[in-house]
Image (cartoon, rainbow, N blue to C red; front, side):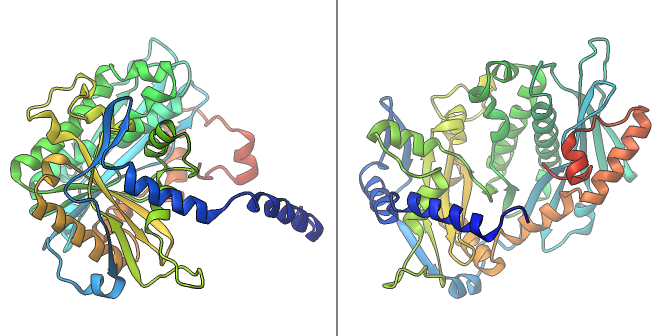
Length: 415
């Protein structure tokens, strides 16, 4: 241990000085004010960027009651994509590998066996051509492809990671869509948020959003929304960790203040319950009603957005992002549940999705079972990552480019 007790005490004293200037009750009261006065609708630059669907409400249900209620959707399917993490090699290549898998509740072993695998590669050598067509393996259960990413001077790891992750996920979802009968749950947002954020991060990344391979990924998600709307099967996204600050920024711009670190902190303040002694009440889940969102990256798919030029077959408002949030006090975590407006404009469907998610979160004490199963199927474990990277080194006849953190933490530490 590098800190002696006296040092720990000193740091704690510093934290205490900060705490004295931060009043949690003021933050909670301001969150109530924003909820009551500024979200129906939230306006930014004269544009309605957030508004409730139907009546704006906060709901509470006992964890045990929610877990025991009948599920509105008899079967559920989940989908996730996992990667080995971006890896740089001494031959100048930066690669990532993603595999996507779909789960079923009740289980379907043939479906679980199916995989979509994408290797993305960034080459600094302009003479290198790596693109390949889709090929099939494992008796047709595995579909795989190499994709050479657009060349950039920086952010190579961000580019290979996002394109591998989202191409594998969207291709697998489209390929398996027809097996879903009742409810489809993506492990994450309904659109490729990590990719759409490029527009705000750096001009070089923003320029990639008009490249064909990038637009193909966005088109896949638009096609996915259309496929499920055409079949009348709800498509939702379950976001386990949301760090978005879009609503917080809009409130700060409009009101001059928003003391929360991000949107999750804002909604947690709204949904957390305390007893008379100030202790957190942990026997009930709480959630909001549904909202239509055109703020942050959600603006790309707004009715008045351009969807990056991707053609939309339905009326533009059908693609808008809608969401509600669920707070689980047992773990002190907040989840965001998304769906396209084409799904949630129907009140009965909104209510059914809400009841399904609350029941699943209550029973699983976390994400729905379909999401957990998809995560387990798609996850590439630490040992598997190490073995894959060693095999790729052998095939490339080139070693990975090591950094000091590889020495300090071990070659396969997760970033």
